[in-house]
Image (tube, rainbow over all chains, first blue to last red; front, side, top):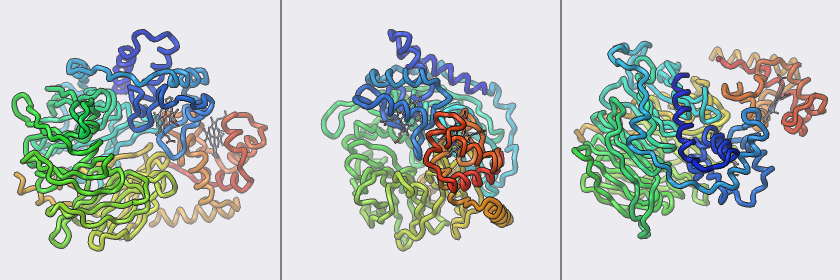
Length: 520
Length: 102
C-alpha cells in the first residue's frame, strides 16, 4: 500500500505542473482526469491504450451519451464503469472539461524529474533471501502476468507470478497502476522489471516477490528493454516523447534521448517511443521511433552514441529478433510491411509484405524442415485477415494464413506443435485463440477461452499454453499444448500480457535455446 | 478431473432444483452484468455489491423487484428492464453457483 500512495503523490505532482492557470473547476476536473483516466486515455489527452479525449475528438458529441459511457463503462472493452466511484457532479464536470480541453503539449519530464522519482523500498539488498522462498525447479518456469485491474489502477493492479509446472501462484507485487510489460534479467534470475501504463518501472526481487525500487520514466508508454549483460535498461514513452537509459541495478537514469526525426515523407516530427529491445548479439539497444519511422541503435559505450536508420516505415511499432539477434523484424502499421533490419550493418535488408496493420507482438519464429519461419500477426480488421509467414533466411514471404479476425500476439515453442494467435476482433471472436499447425501452416483448431482472450504464452518447457481471459474474464487459463485440455485457471482482475522467464533462453519465442549460442 | 465431475454434479443439482440453465445464465451475465459485478466477483476497487455471495432466491427476488421498479436504483432498473423470468432464473442460478477461490 505504501507503494500506491507514493505513486499517487507523483501523479498529483504531475497534475499540478500541467495546469498552472486553470480555474478551480477545471483544476478539479483535470485532477480527476489525471487520477482516474490518464493511465488509459493519455496524460496529454492524446490517447494511449484508449481513444483520445479532447475538444477535437469529442466535438459535437452528446454530453448525455458521454456521461452514460463514463457511468456504465463500455462492455467488452477496458473502459470501466465509474458509477459510484465518481459523483454525478464530478462526471458532468469531467465531460464539460474533456469537451473543452485541447490535446496538451508534450509535458516536460527530465532526467532530474526521473532522478527525484526513484523510490527505494529495500535499502539493503543483502538482507534479501539468497534463494527462492517457494518451491521451484528452475526460475525459467516462472510466468509473470500483467494484471491490469479493472480500473487500470488500484488494488487490482499488480504483477502476478506463477510456477508454470504446478500452475500455482507464487507471488504478486502491487504496481499502483496497470502493469503492462514484464522483463526478466538475462544474467541474474532473481531480478524482474515491470513497467506500468503510467511509465513507472519496478525492480522486483523474484526470490522474495517484493519490489525493491521504482522510478517514474514518463507519463505513459510501454517501451522497455534490457541489455544482454543485464546491466542496463532502456525505457521509452508516448508522453512525453523521450527515452532513457537506466542502471538496471539502481534504476538511476543515465541519459535521456529526445525522440524526433524526419519521417519517410520528409517531415520533421516529434515521436512516440515504440518497441525497445536488447539483443544477445551485441551490447546495444534498438528503439523504434513510431511516428518518425526510424530505428535507432544505441551503443552501450561512453556517451551512448546513436546510429539512426531512417525511412524504415510509416508508424513503426513492435519487433522481434532472429539470427542470433543480429536481425530485427519490425512492424510498420501504416504501410502494411514488416521491415528486416541488420543490426550489424545497421541498415534495412528488405521490407516484407504483411497483413493490415501489422502488430507482431513479441513475434515468433520456428524451425521447420530446415527453414526458419517467422510469424507475424496483424491488428487490423480488414478483408484480408491473415497471419504472415516469412522465410527468415531468404527474407521472403512464404504464406499468408487466413485466420478468423485481427490478431495481436503469436506464441510458439520449439517443443509445441502449434503456433497460437489471439483473435481480437470486437465480437464473439475475441473469446478465441487459433492454433496454426507448424508443418501444414493452416489453422488446425480454435479454442474458446472466454473473456477477451489474448497474449498466449508457452511455459518454458513448451508443455502448457497460458492465455489471458482479459477484460471481464478475470482469469488466466492453462491448456495442455498437445491435447488442449484445460488444466488450470488462475483468477485475477483483467489479466493482459503474459511473460515467461524462458524467453531469456530462446530470444524469440519458438526458437531452441541453442539458436542464441552462435551470437556469443 | 475430480473438479470437473464436481462441477457437473453441481450443475445438475442447480439445473434440477431451479429448472434454470447455467450456461444461458453465464452468457447473459457476461453480456449484461460482468462489467459491474464481475463474471465471478466485482473488482476490488469497485463499489458494486458482491452478488456472487447471494443465494438463488435472494437474487431472483432482487432482480424481479428491480425489473418491476418496486426496488429503486436507476442503474439496476435500466439493466433489468428487458429481462424475462427465464433470464432472471438463469442469471440467479449462475451467480448462486459461483464460488471464487479468493
